[in-house]
Structures are given as C-alpha cells and as structure tokens.
Image (cartoon, rainbow, N blue to C red):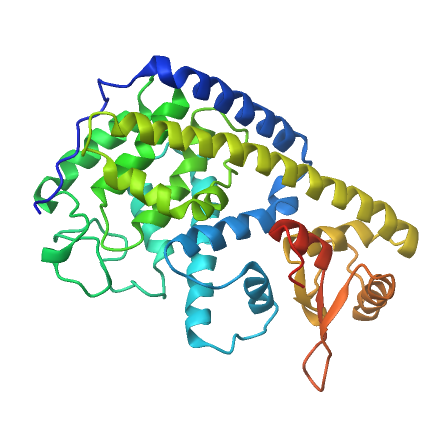
Length: 371
C-alpha cells in the first residue's frame, strides 16, 4: 500500500441533486438548534456540561473509557483508582481546553493553520502522545492499523509528508472558500483533514473540534457550540468505514456527505432537545432555590453548580461582592442538600471536604441515571 494521494479541492463530482433533500433538512435542523442556543442566556455556563460530554465522547471514539461522571468527580478532587482512567481524563480535559481556546481565538482572528498547531499543542499537553511532535505537523510517514502493526499491515497510509504542506494549503483555502452549500463544504473539510492526517497523534479529535469552529465562522451558529460526537460515537463503525472508502469508489464522496448530513440532522435535533431541557432545569431550579434560600447568593451559586455539577463544598467561591462567608455558603449547600437538589457522593472527614453533586443535571446530559 502506498501513501494516499488526496483529491484536490474543490471536488468536481458532487451529485448535488441526490443530496438536496439532505441539505435542506440539515440546514433547517441547524437553524432550529441555533435558535435554541440563541435563547440560552449564558450558554458558556449552562451548556458547560454538554461541552464536557462532547470531549468525553470524541475522546471515546479514539479509545478512552472515562465517563462524564468520572471527569466531574476528578474535578471535585476524587482521583480515579486506575492510572489509565487518569490518563483518559487528562485527554478529555485537554480537549475541552482546546475547544475553549479555539472559541476565544476565533473572536480575534480567522481560523488558520497556526491556530490548528496551537490546538494540537493543547490537546497533547502532558498526556499520551505528548512526545509525538506536539504542536508540529508531522515530518515522517504515519499509518493507521492494528496497535503495534507495521506499515506493511496498515489499513490506511496518509499522504507522504513531503507533500503535506501542499495538501494543507489547499485544504485551508477550501475551508475559507465560498461554496454552494456550507454544510456539504464542512463534510468535505472534516473528511479531507482526516485523510491528510497532518499530525502523528490527535487527528481524529482535532477533526471533530473543527466542526463547531467551521459552523461558527460561516455564520451558521451564533456560538461555536455543536456536539456531533454522540452520533459519531454511536455510529463509529460506519463513520470510520465511510472515511476509509473515500477515493476507493466513484460515489464514495457522495455517500460520505450523505452520512455526514444525516449526522448533522439527528445531532442538531438532539442538541436542541438537550439545550432546552437544560434551560428548563435551570429556570426551574432558580425559582426553587430562591424560594428555599431567599438569598442574594442563590443564583450565582446555581450558576457555579451548572459549570461544575460535582464539587467539594470547600471549593465554592462565588464571584460576587460582597463575598459570602464560609458559613453562609455551608448553610446554602445544606439547604439544597436537605431539599434533595444536591446529593452527597462523599462524606467529609477530617480535612477532606464533603463531595456533592447536582445529579439531575448530570443524568440529563448522559441521558440515563449515572449518579
């Protein structure tokens, strides 16, 4: 098997007529989701658990096993028993950091290859793969196959590194080009990035990070917050098979685009439903917490619980003036615990603070009872 030679973009053989029904549905679904997103008063706070879940699921596609609940517990100071889980959580937290760095950067400058390098540097910071040319495009040949298998047994060999910058330059120009439909363009942008495989590690996760960035830059979303990894993880075999088929048959690109548009449609509907449910939960809890506490600190506390739904009681610090005393915060938490809003997941002992969780939010994000 020789290194793959990518088709130059833009593609010239897209079957637009057969894709039109999918294009229309995908654009409508995305517009509906953005309407929901626009109505969320503080999406960075309220949708923070969904951002973390996206990091969990995107990393899971690459083989990590840590769950959303384990990530939250780790952030609350609870070390996992297995070292492999700790490494998984490090990768997930880096993914989330990269998403947030990208959002901040796009408010200052357009997406470019330098930002891509920055994101790669964040993604592999102090985790598995940190020694694989972190923050640098590869200068050697890589390949995809069973773990530890030689290149002779590869399932896919990405392009020759000697031509890598030529392919990336074409890819970046296409990313910023005006095309007949932006969602079809995104399907091609994502797949071509995975084909080029410009890094020695982290390509899959970076390729999925690109999805909300592209949607935001093209004006299709008001915030770069779109979570596609749930669909891709649940259809992992087809996702990989569709990517592998590119270049192997005349209709492979059209089949890939149709698959990607279907993923966008279903995930936009799921994202909108979850965002609405989270907003409803927040509004309901806000009313209830205010009635229970009659406190000026009730809403700032609730905001912090949505950002970090598993926490140690001693870690609560509200960004308000005047600041509440430690005793005032303890009284608020006790009231919420007694009302069943917060659940004790670890009793305090000695110097170790009590561990608490906003379980309804975590279970809502997971779609099942996990805490």
